[in-house]
Amino acid sequence: MFANERVRGIVYQVLLLAAVVGVGWFLFANTQHNLSTRQIQVGFGFLSREAGFEIAETHVSYDPSNTYGRALWAGLLNTLWVSAIGIVAATILGTLIGVARLSSNWLVARLASAYVEFMRNIPLLLQLFVWYGLITELLPPVREAIAFGDLAFLSQRGLRHAWPQPAPGWSAAGWALAAAAALAFAWRHLARRRQRATGAQWPVLWPSLALLVALPATAWLAGGAPTALDVPRLGGFDFQGGRSLSPEFIALLVGLSTYTAAFIAEVVRGGILSVPRGQAEAAMALGLKPGRRLRLVTMPQALRVIVPPLTSQYLNLTKNSSLAVAIGYPDLVAVANTTMNQTGQAIEAIAILMAVYLAISLAISLLMNWYAARVRLVER
Image 1 (cartoon, helix red, strand yellow):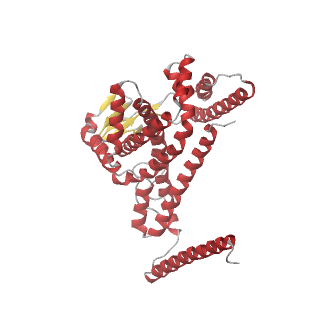
Image 2: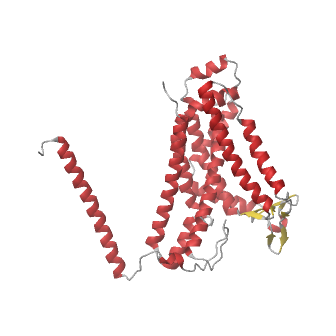
Image 3: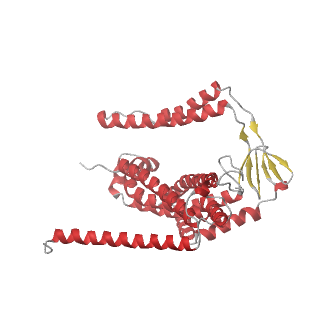
């Protein structure tokens, strides 16, 4: 019986599984013994206890009397916020630089190459220190802030800008914008289905822009057309009112975006070079201008090569956001470190960090895999 290759394969897999389970059980039992010996309580009950520490900037209401769970939630939102904006900024910048590296203009191509080589060969942590130092040292103090009219002020404390005061009209406009985006996506999908079925092309860009502008504007008007702004004003040692972007957030966002953009530029360049030259020559024969050749012929074919490595860069940017703790931005890792130091629940805090980053990474991977399937060329 053991001479049968299939039987041997099953036996080996069972033995391997038993070894993995045995090692896992040994580690778990050893950890439990050590914790009980040191009288360390294990569990997530600390999440409902009062945190007692402040968080400099949050996207939800939070004060020190809230629980540790609320504090971790505020840190998670900070991580998601900077990661989402960083992904968009890095994608735009990286795409422009990747295309510029293939430019026929010698100076543009060499400048883009110099940017890529410079940015990707300097550690990200060092770049974050540089950006943070530039913001806090080169910008003027609060009382000498650079004013952009009465609506925004730039200083060592970051950017303080005006913000609409809460009103039903703005809430209605926000929901209308989300609905308009969904309708624009549905219209684009319907137009593509019709083109595949009949060959007829429906306009997509202008109807989508009309939806994104007209629907929120209509909701804003129906909500009373509010125009009141919460304008920042100097009071004491800092500005009061409006919204602010802290120097820590700006430094982290710029550092993550510019660093990741260098890698995305190489991904985009490789994707464009993977498209056969004959495709561009055929587009030239049809009289398409360079911009339209890139948008209609080259990039749609290059995306099948670009998307898989692009997913890795999005994951790297999200995980690299944990370096925020080095410059004082209160992301999830910074809040978890404070929680760990105050409660002593190191295992639980680390488990939460691992679970959250795993969930975020899997969500990004699923979304990008879905997009990769959508842009994949269907061979006949």
